[in-house]
Amino acid sequence: MKKSWMWIIGIVLVVILINLLFFSSKSSENIKIGVITDLTGPAAYWGESSRVGAELARQDLEAEGYIVDLVFEDYQLDATKALNGAQKLVNIDNVDGIYAEFNPAAISVGSFVKDKNILFVYDAAVISPLQDFPLAYKTYLDYQEGCKQVAQKFKDEGMEKIGVLKVNLEAGELCLSGVKEVYGDNTFVESFNLGDQDFRTQFLKFKENNVPAVIGAMFEGDTLNALKVIKEQKLDMKYGTVDDSITDQVTNLYAKELEGSWSFGFGQVSPEFSSRLSGDKLSTEYGAAITYIHIMQMGRALGSCKGDMECVKQKMDNSKPDSTIGFEGFNNHIAKLNMTIKGR
Image (cartoon, rainbow, N blue to C red; front, side, top):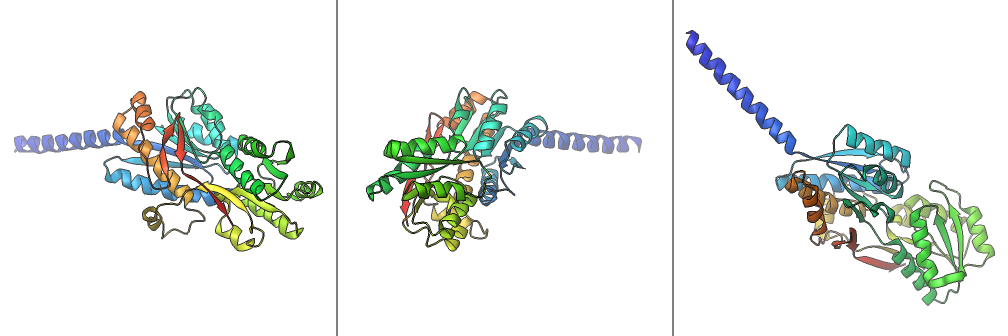
């Protein structure tokens, strides 16, 4: 009888040991990706879209055999909160990679993780985070080229001078550079800080200089505030911006003010991917599409390379084109994306 019990206890112990080894092995193979975006602040309309895209990527990666844990950090476009979120992701959550959105996070998070041997992909206009950082990759539109093309459209229509509503960030400088390639000294610049809501002073100065059009590549809230001034002051000014800031809310409120406007933006989201978002009420599908592409790339690279970061870099460098939103590959760690110019 004692021998039987010993056998049973032995079998139980073996089963427990096997389970412990199995789950330990499984958890060690899990990939952790931190996502730093705005979920409750001025750019939450985009961040919520990105969250949906990241979750779809997680599901598809799991179907391919890659178990990915996503850890979201809401930073509300506050660079300090972005940095705090990155420190938590690295020091507590032990993430393998970070996907960050917008200028404040791209710069602050990029500086922090540069020496951490962590894959970093950021969705923002800025280029500086790539400097001396072999595991950093940039996605999003080319603000300098986009603003240049919008400016050219206005010039082709006979407008001899232009106004630029410039945010005091690197993205604003890039846009201004593009506009000046077209207009040179006939560019009138008024600046603002991220989070400012009242543009009446800036537009008063544009009016004094008789500028017929204003370009401001900004967020949805900034576009709403700019068009509000144009409407309230009955200004005869055309408007140029980045396409993803012209959401349904913007078009519903300021359809008349948008007449004659130009914008630069992404190509069309593929119908197949768009159909997967039909159950989600998103202000924009762009965030979901671009985040989906890059979380898929990160998950595959990190999952197949198992800690070999040189291998991860090679995988990312050789990322295949993706029709979800016109991704053509990385060139010097900058995503090549189809860009369109739209008139209204």
